[in-house]
Length: 292
Image (cartoon, rainbow, N blue to C red; front, side, top):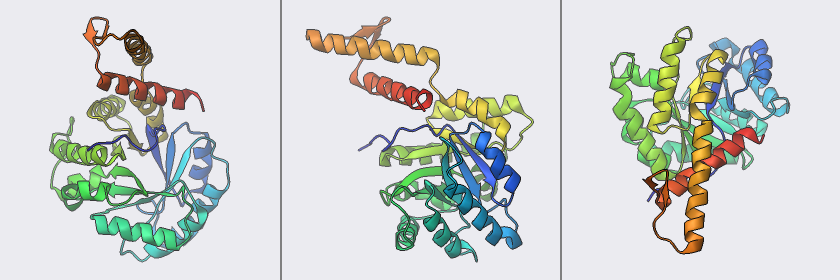
């Protein structure tokens, strides 16, 4: 049985920001991303991790990031920094804690237990990165493991690496994994984010991949450069035509219901309840984007 994600909030553009870079954290306050991942993992050298941890926790507690959903990516399970990261992040209370290489439902439950024991507030949700063959094969179990898990984040670079694939236009080697993870997320009612695009100078290639992710059904895309935010917001937002058509569908359906008519058409197209649900989702997302 499928269900809608628990909250329909904009997560179109989700930008990684290096936790060790104070200037970057300051710059992020003016970037129009829907969400930020303040990174303690890949973007931070081992000797800098404790200072970066303090810096991102202070950033989360500053109240200076406006509408942006703030999350922190901790170091992975089994690393020297993981437990200290979780304890500090739980105290800071971001809206999400992003954990790399989550491979099983048991790991999800262990992470949730650790956050709760460390006193994480209820609004601090778990974001699990799906970036290994093992995670793909267990995606359904991971997605359904706990209600505190809110978002699946595709780690496409690691997936390419671990499957011995190649980065190619169109991402054919990744499509089965992306689709399987997306199905798992939808079955569990979770949000799912597409992975990053590496070539920040290839705007045309990036836009094509963002469009592909939206067409596949992803809620948004993780990003590595501020220049990618605007085209991502556009790609994953309902267009003016989408909003207009959604309004027409809902109006026609409600009129037919009031008049006792069983058949509804809009612009020559038969309308069923599934089209109404989709129209309602489009309008809700549009209102969430424009109303903040």
